[in-house]
Image (cartoon, rainbow, N blue to C red; front, top):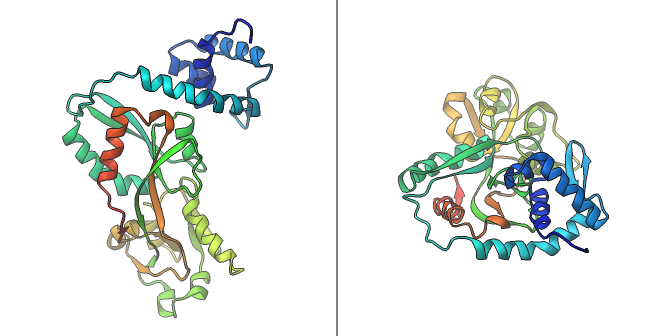
Length: 303
């Protein structure tokens, strides 16, 4: 790499974290043409395209991933050493942090957290990004958001996590559903169409289908919803059956006119954690917010 410009390392890192020329430019405070020019120089320097467009997104090549792993320790050390060493004071700090969560987890986490945040750090605020199908940890990997609350069975190594809580699943049916006159069990559970939840990553619904597949059974999907909180009301007005986290089913039982039933399947507990990227590990404001969220939950089931 004759006459290599080390400034390009920062450009490369921005491209790796955002997977977007325009977002990388915004992150660095430069124009998009300037970032495009930097990418062209990086491609010539390493004789590799580094990023290729696939399905509307820019994905790193194998060579780019290798370079990212090699450069990451250097970049992390530089950020750590160059950060101001002043103590963080939540009473005087001003900052907006971005967080990604489904409507269920906004319901389960945000009310108490926002109240505590307003008292302890009035200058800090949280911007919530709603969940989209098949998104999740990629939002924090690509620096679209700084924090993610969710259930992810297989997080990538570049992310940190803090366990928040776990809760059980329950079935709900409308009060007066014909299944309530039958013996409740797996056969009755499968005799009626289901409301499936495709919100966020579909990890919650997938565990139901995986448990059924292990018994060579399937359920009929009558409708697919993107909202946990809408589900009780859809079920309350139909003959659909749904499986939900207990906290949601219990909170909306009366006003949705639904009845709770045990799930006739051996489902694992639904674990919820807070996730962030390694790049934010030593950020004092970030760490304080993570600690505040974590302190509100004990490692017990919500029931």
